[in-house]
Length: 187
Ligand code: SF4
Image 1: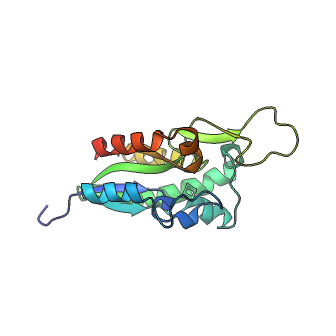
Image 2: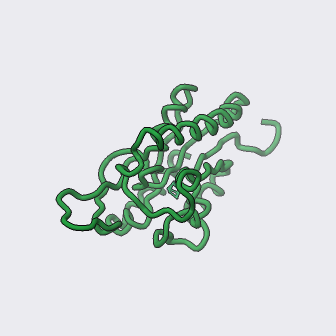
């Protein structure tokens, strides 16, 4: 590099920089995920913010739902198109020699989860309610699955890190700090 740029870019789910994209009652910051952003600033990386796939698809007035509500061919097709467009843009950065160091998703999200997604608990009687009747299981959100496939096609292999949100932090309070430590080592 001939100037001060680090040459490192971190791709983030939209809500990490803008909690207003989340469904109601899920934000635990007034504006953005402060500790994550502070770490990215400290590490001197550029930040590329993905548009919120659920807002593109279902609007800002949507309700929170588990993965099975999003894992349908039409939704997957729309997410794949978005993932392909973003990948095309990001591939120009890698062609210029910059490194995509990490993709930060929103852990537990049916769309942007990395290692965990929510699903309806089994054997619920009567009307199911979110988040009461949700459990988190290993799996990747539908958009991130498509996005990762796109990256693999262009032979780009960042670290995939899920930032635990409100629900996962309430189940496992240590998970957020552990994720930050993991990210600090990666960057
Ligand atoms: S997790 Fe993904 S789909 Fe959900 S608000 Fe964040 S960016 Fe949007």
